[in-house]
Each structure stands twice: as structure tokens, then as C-alpha cells.
Length: 134
Image (cartoon, rainbow, N blue to C red; front, side, top):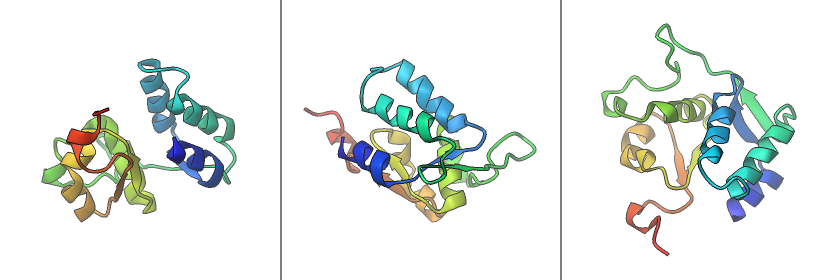
């Protein structure tokens, strides 16, 4: 909760200028609670998506195969979730860490991501076993 409130009030949110990230947020919310914290965050992104002091739109180049050019060509990341690659490419392009709550792909690949200059902040810590315990 604190992170979402802080992100909305004090940080500049980064998204890609092709809207793949914003669309993924919206799709994920359709599968979860439409009025939870994620919805508040997405509402903030929608409301400020063209205000560069709140949301910065970053161009992410695609290679000839349609993959994100800034996503590392690293065998250790060959099985990294294709839907998460845009976030990793954005982080590598900008040098801004990805913020992750409970997506295990990030913790499973943290060493390879870090080796490629992609930092990840884990809101719920790096112990997957504790992510969903009450």
C-alpha cells in the first residue's frame, strides 16, 4: 500500500511509448480485483500518461524479430517470461529498477538480470515462500 501511494504522489512512473506496459497492467486488473491498489495505480497512469512530471513514456526499440532490442540476448534469460521482457528492456534502457511484488520469474532470474544491468526491487522480499503467507 505504501509503495503505491508513494509512487502516485512522489515518483515518475515509466511506461513504454507503444503502451504495451499500460495494456498489460489493464489486462492483469481484469483478472483480479478491479478496485484494489493495482486499479488505483493504473488510474494514476491513465490520468497522467501524457504528463512527463508524473509518467514518462520511453521508446523501446524492437529488433527484426519483433523482440525488445534492450532485452539481453543471454542464454540464462532464454526462458524468461516473454510478457515480462518489456519491463526488463525498459529497466535496462533507463537504468531504473523494476519494482516487483510477487512475480517469481524475477527472483528466479535475478542473477542473470543483474549481470545484464537490470536491477529489481522486491516489494515483498526475495523469499518466495513468504510471499503469500498470512
